[in-house]
Length: 152
Ligand code: ASC
Image (cartoon, rainbow, N blue to C red; front, side):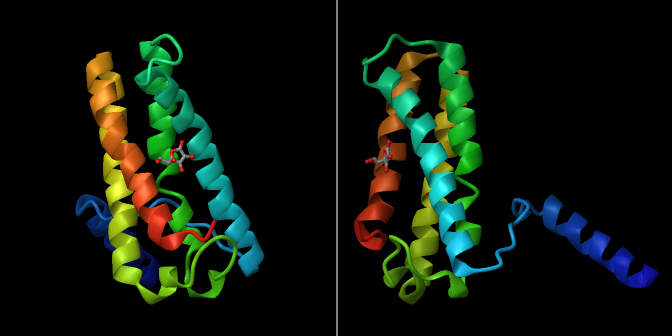
């Protein structure tokens, strides 16, 4: 038992050092819970993304601190929905293509996480032009996935 624990700790350490750690993944009792979970994560992300977008698009005055805080939440939330897209979780607004074209779905999911990370980095500079430059690609990365993998 102790040896097994040691092995797991060693594996987790290697994974973390290799930068392949995943966020604490949720466990779902039923598909409905996974669907609710991923939709909730995406909903929260959209609320905060919208606040950043309002500044990037000049709809509300630029507030560097607010931009940074909201972009940090966007980047953190961006890591979460994917645990709710396992094989047993079909349904909701997700097209069957999510499970048929897994490599493509994963690529777009990773692209979105990379772009939202860049948005958070841009927001930390306190430079509105950098925020604007990062916002477009981040929004495009949301849309790219919705175009192919969301039904409505
Ligand atoms: C949002 C939101 C999305 C994306 C997308 C960008 O604020 O809710 O799904 O941006 O519309 O094109």
